[in-house]
Length: 424
Image (cartoon, rainbow, N blue to C red; front, side):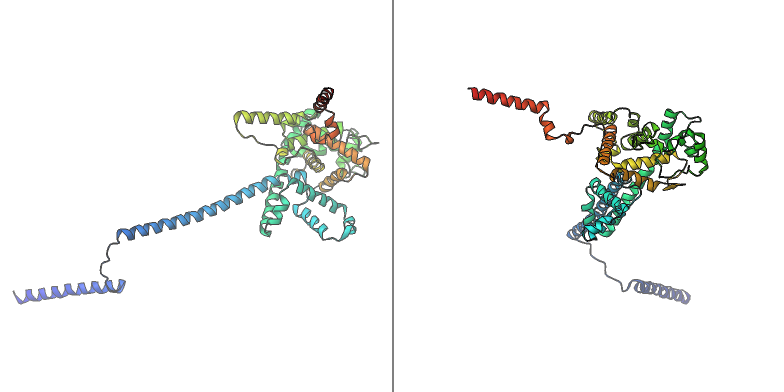
């Protein structure tokens, strides 16, 4: 070997050893000292690791299931409160909140003696009656409210309020269309009342104006129509005048303004459309058998098809009697539907809906004497018969039941048997 070839081989060898040592140093600097190769895990170790992983997965799945279950419970509660709340504005309080009713009840617990109770204002008394209507309608409310934490109670009130306002809005939209149809069919105005455009309603429309006209005024008098439209002295329409649509045959007796009050056809139609069904509103001439026919047909269809049918409002809230506050609610809704106002509000020009609702409620709940109370009771019985048309079995006295033929026959048979025994 020449000296040149020897030198080249020596350099190449040194270079290779240098590169190997550099690679080893790099590995040590990155990962620490070189580790000997690890032995493969035994089958028992691998099985234990797999079981441990399965346990972790099962624990995570259980946590997810618990979270989803809690979420489902909250969703069910929310839907329940929303559904229950839909009855609040309709039969308890159109403008007051649940908090107002609860606060008044709490205030009465804090007062000392009957003297403070007697000093309560009319508005406070109305709130207190509303609280009792609330607890009768929502029989679960007191216990649930007592068992809840404050945050849960606030959450419940929120969803009840949402349900209440949603139902009021739905009823407003429903009656907007239905009222125009009823007015057009019965009064046949020219032009007809537009079901979509509310600007053509109110006092600018002769048919709607007649129904909205104060009971003490005569809409057929051109001077009255002009005065109401101009809002001149003596013709300003406020809640202190009962609208004509509240009266039977849309006519009031100035010498007896209670005669026929709250028996208006369109008022009754509005009530049945909201609380039973729009189709039942077509049947108002009789004693309310239409509501029973609708119910019987639904039961028959459910029995035949096995398919659950949609319940109407009265069924959902287990309502079988017409109540004062539900009449006041419908009166406000019908009045709004006849007006030219396009969005729900508590005040329409000179007309205050809050005071109008209170006036109607007080007519029923605060009669001036026993005879007035009897007239109110008869009026509510008329309403219940017109809307529901069901017999009132629970109103039958024991004496009346005893004289009915089934019971009378039972007594006669027993008497004959006793007589025959004695003769033998």
